[in-house]
Length: 132
Image (cartoon, rainbow, N blue to C red; front, side):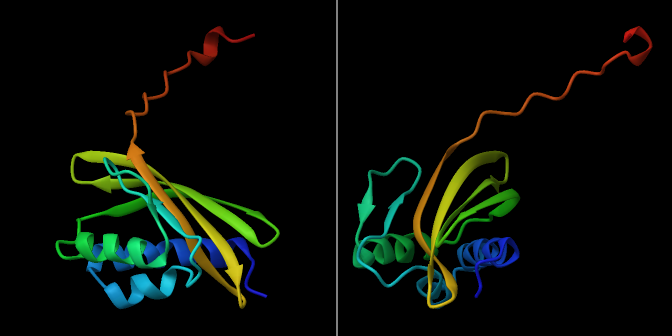
């Protein structure tokens, strides 16, 4: 069974590989073939159903973004899982949630949503000499 955290993070990485390279074939393989898939791109309304979701990605992949996924954190609950990660686009940064379902021993994406991420404040330096 492929329901390990390592395999989930690999499936998530393949999504970003398809997105950055403009590989529509790989993008179609990553997503579930089921009709209950959904997607919310930044600034778009909800996209529902396999055909509509794949059309939305075809539009985006015509000019693939220069995107880099960082800090992925995966969570598994039975045959469902999700990854929260940052999407770095040049100077901009988004935060995304990618939801997967285990189908025939492979993690298949069933939902993607990304939105603007606030800058993370730098941690304050703590003066350890004043700690008791």
